[in-house]
Length: 199
Length: 251
Length: 129
Image 1 (cartoon, rainbow over the protein chains, first blue to last red):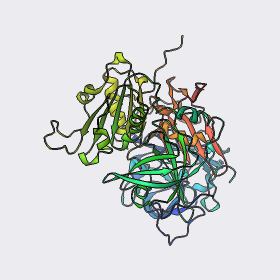
Image 2: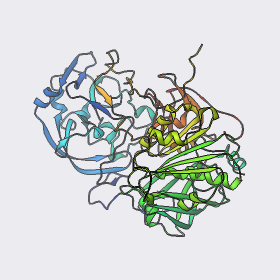
Image 3: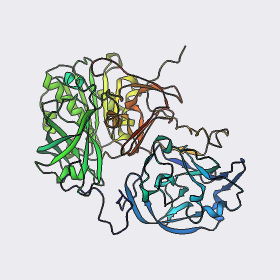
Image 4: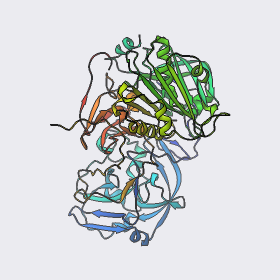
């Protein structure tokens, strides 16, 4: 049993919100990184969906901007135990991006500029649960938070919301991504506290 | 002896220990030295660090690494903590702790950024800000053991009041040469404008490559990268340069 | 003859994109539109910071062991890798080519260690080195 550090609060404040188990509220927006921050030129940026049959559908930055955007205010839950409430985002729903994609796949492996990957069930990207987000709090998404665009899947731990998103690879198999091959949970539901394999 | 004590750790998994704060010293307006009593402390090498674990009443817990500032001295251990204004842990350690408070700590750890008394080559120490702390442990270990290995210290700080250990560093210590660099504000009549470290500054303290000196650089990441590049450009073999980076701020 | 071992040191060139083995774009030319700005990015520590976490798993000091990057062949001590975090997941990358050399995840009841990015680890035996 750890000893309590008298008077130590950390960066947290008492929360009025409902917190998933083991989480603490923060008002900052901490940056976690697994490598250097890629700087992706919007002119060269592409977002692609590749099906299990290797059919590819790609969008340029201007094509993404031309699509109807949604504004959403969501809560974020990070595996490092902070949660941040009421974060405002703008992005394009994956329902829209995947609408004309012909697939029987059940899983998606998300690839990012810089080499990061993460896996999740395809159904968790649909039904108004996921976006390609490019604005945060009224501004263009900063590179350290995943700009120009990141995946936003707020009902799962934040490592699933891949920064610098580049493609979705659809597959019948669930293939573990960067953190999932090193012990993080394949699904990552914060309400069931699925942090690590076996949780 | 530190060496024997650390060897004794082989085969023993490192565990968390409870340390008691038994004293504090103000080093600068933003930095305090914490004097800890750690029963069973196995001793350490100059340059090693400890991990501190802080736990709030509701169970929230976080860890940070802090360099050891003191030479090995029984169960007594000193850490110097610089307060980082946006930091989560350093303001607590540098402002809120009271004598008698308990801290959880594990260590000593780190076997690479260390100076061992049996090293006979000349030593260059390069500190950026609170990067002085593990280098001070080396200076203190050298003095404690009475060895005569030549040491040079280049210590870069923002302003004169940011210097830690200033009285100790200005006291005579044969074979130790100390050079201060100021990046924002200099003392009166100082012959150099405030600026970050330059090749000229480094050339003035670097040992000739033929002397096979070892250089230790510690500080914020950007400082360490820059200082290490300068030393390589001056002909120091990269494998004689040892570095420790605190990250962007070091909280 | 093997190439002479180069000590890890900061490199002037930018990190390479290291594709995931299953990256559908792995067969395409290197991504030229991704830049890394060394002047801005100093948000990493170095392998010295792994000493505590790895001391939970090893009885010897791992950060002074010599590794060899499987990406570019550079050798050097684990202490000189670039470490990104914070925990529970720490990623240590080669300072020359950016490849992931080591990952360690500290879970509640388990820890995971991935060393696939190093050809081997060389430990000095004897004393505490």
